Amino acid sequence: MFFEKELETMDRKSLENLQVERLKEKIEYAYNNVEFYRKKFQESGITKESINSIEDIRKLPFTTKNDFRDNYPFGLLAKPMKEIIRIHSSSGTTGKPTVVAYTKNDIETWSRLVARIAKAAGVTDEDIVQIAFGYGLFTGGFGLHYGLEKVGAAIIPASSGNTKRQVMIMKDYGATVLVCTPSYALYIGEVARQMNLNPQEDLKLRIGMFGAEPWSEQMRKKIEESLAIKAYDNYGLSEIIGPGVAGECVEQNGMHIAEDHFIVEIINPDTLEPAKEGEYGELVVTTLTKEALPVFRYRTRDITRLIKTPCSCGRTSYRMEKPIGRTDDMLIIRGVNVFPSQIEEVLFNIEGISPHYQIIVDRMGALDTMTIMVEANANLFFDEMKKQKQLLDKINAELKTTLGIDVEVKLVEPNSIQRSEGKAKRIIDKRKF
Image 1 (cartoon, helix red, strand yellow):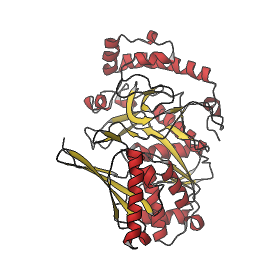
Image 2: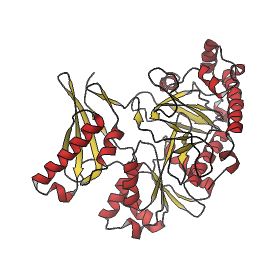
Image 3: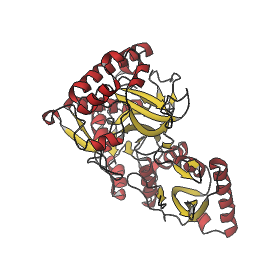
Image 4: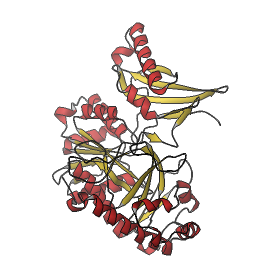
């Protein structure tokens, strides 16, 4: 299903011509309205005449999260406050929050982009959508809300938390679509069973739209089994616009990027040069239509790769794979790069453990250590030691094969790892550098 079929199925040549035209316009717009970009473009000798092809985008300087922080809160705005109708920001847990703003046209654009990914996942005007993202400065709740209303669906703005009440509402109101983080979806399924409900028989859910944290294909499988739904991934980040940058269609084979609104690149994060075709690298995004806060070559820190082969759904845009990690949450353990998603992929393929785990990193002397706390299923945890030992040996062997290093694995009691009602806290890094 399509929301804007003509734009979503545009031929590649027309799409690239549109991208170049919009990029030239946006460079001139930012030069005239944002001092930060005027200075950067002057230093780089960039004008709209510098751009004649998509590849010319590489002439532009990068923008980073630090640029947002250095210009906190409103230094990157291209519009006066009287034309701003919405302000969001990050939590600021790792530094100054990144503050983003929207004009009326930006909100309309954002809503239409979310409507595209909702329709691509199969949401219709007959659906009842329970949004279990937090409503507030975080872009997830409001972003999905307005886009799903654009589709015509009935929205339940449940927000996050109070999970038993979430399940009660889901059952009593007959919610057919769930929107939240993937880790919270898993927890909701768990709580439903604790309430003696069978999601397949007692709930009407059929679709899940999940985002805001990395998740693996194995986690998708667990969620689909737990809630008896089809689970779809979507991607966005507040610095760019929020959710709606990309989303999966019913083929579940990569997220279609709204390329008429964004130019995406994959770069080698070390050399900053373009990654080779099909290689993993850091995603870089340029906005083409935002009014309040245009952004050029934003380094997302997310590691992914592009899929350029045609999709059988008929959309012509490139797709991005699920991010496998971030350049800034990649763990370096004894000189080896380790992504939490690698660990999750291994754990979720092993029978006898629940889909809840935590990674604890520490340093003993000069040596990094990694301990992975894994919940064993109740039957196994309280079963004989021999079976526990066999399970531990299996987990250790498969992690060693995947990561290339030895790690310690500890089986813990069911329900002993704290559950998340938003983004799961998978990593506790105790090292002091």
